[in-house]
Length: 419
Image 1 (tube, rainbow, N blue to C red):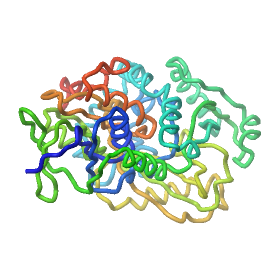
Image 2 (image 1 turned 30 degrees about the horizontal axis):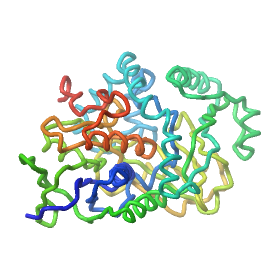
Image 3 (image 1 turned 90 degrees about the vertical axis):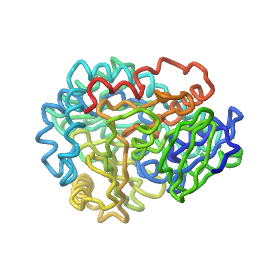
Image 4 (image 1 turned 120 degrees about the horizontal axis):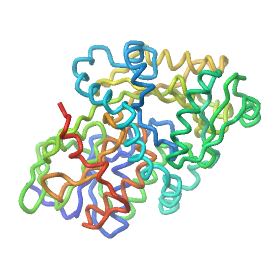
């Protein structure tokens, strides 16, 4: 069995795990990242690039609950189920339905607000620390509404966001046209989040974060962690290559693959996989100046370095690496409906998001030991929440009080209804 010199092993080298490791390195700790994939790959690479300081709304809400049967069984809807996965997902969907009721939804909004509202400021500070300022644009983000009915739904949604502290402005169709002249005319309007940042290349940003962490002494091992054993004075990790190592402390930040390790650390959590997709069209970034979310269809268009990325929709399922062709086809049709001369995408992508029924991440200690800290389950907003997650994790590892009350993100919150 190998002992390690590092103070902390971070299981997972996605954007959240990288940010946690970097913060610990800044505090003078030694860090080893372990991940079977290259640092910053997966959902950390394939997201829409938004620093969503407006993302106080959970996925589940009364309006979604009302439409849930229609959404789940329409293969082209923004929220669908991978073929054959319904039986596996039934317990999770029951929890999701409960969390979509008005009372739980309001509690979830209150829980998400302190995590997201300062996301832009936190990312600007982290970007300065890793010399990554050039990857960020401060041009805001748009939600667009095609007609009056869509706009009314959007205004209800935005009222809840504004009440939680989100800064938002409504634009008439004419004002939208002035801001995004190539966007097709519409009858509804748009909501603008004027202070929102976006990232022009999430993959390269993650790479920069890893490089600066490596410069600060962080190490990386490309390997899987198959088991975790709590010992009196250490955490023992069994690796996929058959080796076993002991660490002083461990951070579980393996995204969609975190559930089994958390269970070994004493906490069962209702984590499932969201299969996320994107398309990329080279040379088309000039179409828009900032991320635009087509609200009713649940996808983003984001102008990235040298390309236009079309990302979004939710397909609940498993970590099967084979994409659902109809999801890619639907996303292509929807993008071409906005810009008919886009042509076909140069590349497509499928990745896996870790999703919980209440849309809150898990940021807490293990129920069995303070040597294990969790940072997973960030759903659609892992990129947004990476810096604040790192701050919370560093506080827990250092036996300090977090920057605010984190009881809403406890891994133990599911005990009342977990099936």
